[in-house]
Length: 264
Image 1 (spheres, rainbow, N blue to C red):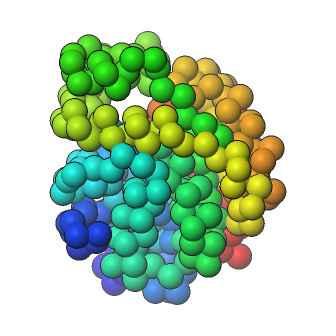
Image 2: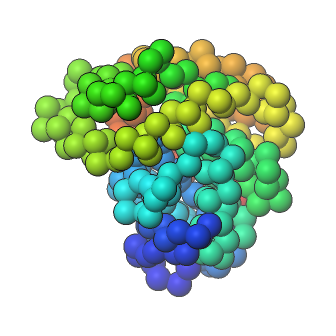
């Protein structure tokens, strides 16, 4: 990663994936990178700008296949998404990485820690858990009434305090996904269960929960924390599912400090 900040497209897993990277470390080629993976129906823009531009760190944020500016199709399993993310990281030449994911992205990060332990130096899960509950009937509603289904997803993810203009932008971004992409994302969530493999993850881990998360209740994050052998837990009270957008400053501080500890 030679440029201090850039957006580029990389060829990975037979597709062209869009990534944003910030090379802030003095030795960008040898430092541990922070790789950010968004959640269901998201894009790299779900990570706040000052986290994507973390000082003295190498930060990579990507659009998953079928999301944002990356080519489709999306995937329908956490394992398939993990393979695509690893392919993108290999294309970028990342050698050792702290992988951080939000919700579905957190499941992908855990899958990567299990599959590629030599590559994942640390794993961070935000608004995720040992399982990812999906409301009954949501997948079918995405097939039959996309507008209503996306409204339901949105209402559970954002608090009423979100600025109305910001809410309109975020809902529009969610609806920019195809129904097939969102269906695949929620099928992946439905099938995910880390209870069998989380105790075998040796990498240091960080779990951040939203105290008022209606999408992935914080007790599922607590359960994950208890299964991971080397994890720390932080709960942000008064915060819902989109905690990195609702509380960007503490999330940036926690992730930045965690990545620095792993690197040192």
